[in-house]
Image (cartoon, one colour):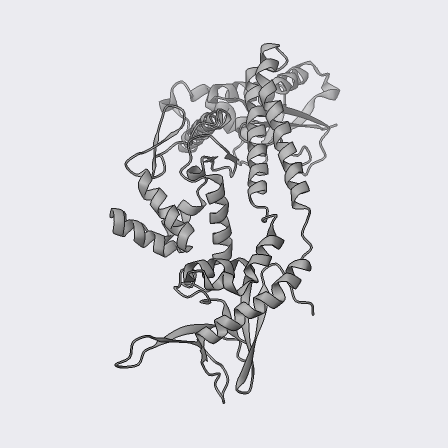
Length: 453
């Protein structure tokens, strides 16, 4: 009778425990270790002590490296298993058991190899072990909330255990963020720091700066996990939340309209041909001033092309339509109880903070060892980071009050074009111009309101 055993090993610093049912074979017994290899020692004893009728015929592994932390350990344990008549199968690798067992004999003197294939095998296993040790070192740094390896981001320098603000380059970063917060323009912010500081970057780099948690005082690792409040930030939480709002808002707009000088740019479409409308500036010779028109970018009508409409007339109609439709739209929005939701998230953060504060005492009392405490602290910090991010992404709780202010015509008259652009894009997704012959009317599509069918 053939008995099949399976052994699963995972390092909690690098991965979560795998599913015991991954084998695709009918397994008689599963041994599983997390971190240490106590179950592997039990497996080896069982292979030596079982009666012939109860001996395992096959042992399934994921990788040969599951058997040990060094080439010598892997070879010795594999030899012990094969001496007991156990055939070992690594389901995610193709090397034969006989090849692996030979590596323990040549590891001390790799020049006496039996074949080129065996030498390649030895090199690959050694490289795998080295890679694992490197990842474990990086994981240990994550547990202690230390910066990831590599050069510090622009605006910071590496300290002993955290990033420190670089006084020579930090003003460039701050100027970049301040300009973006004021004008909502990525390319404009890129041009601003080149003009003022001579720092030339691409728009792609600027986009990475806007999304980089490091400038908000957080550490982000290649695992996708973020730990908050690890070093001094260059932007405060309110500015970070506003940047996220601007990025989400700009993502809905056509290219190069996010920083256009006119507030309606990128918002207006023609209801007849469904073309976006561009702003055209017209001047008359020997006369001061200019005239602005909204013209379809690419009208698809074969006859009777959609004509241009005066920009100021469309803007005034848009403001009047906001005053009429926005209160009703806000009243129809099914907003969650934001205050209750914020309180719930805050309580979860406080609860995790309390558990985090108790860990040193548990180590002192011998209830937890230091390694387990570090791992638990890391998971709590990442959970707190996710909750804080969720809290920052909640919509403003005073949406009704804001809507009441922007419905006043005088409110819009007192604003600059930059400020008008900001408020229009906070509420409006599209301004649709519906034509009836020579006449036209405005229809608004709000970001938070979907018109019923």
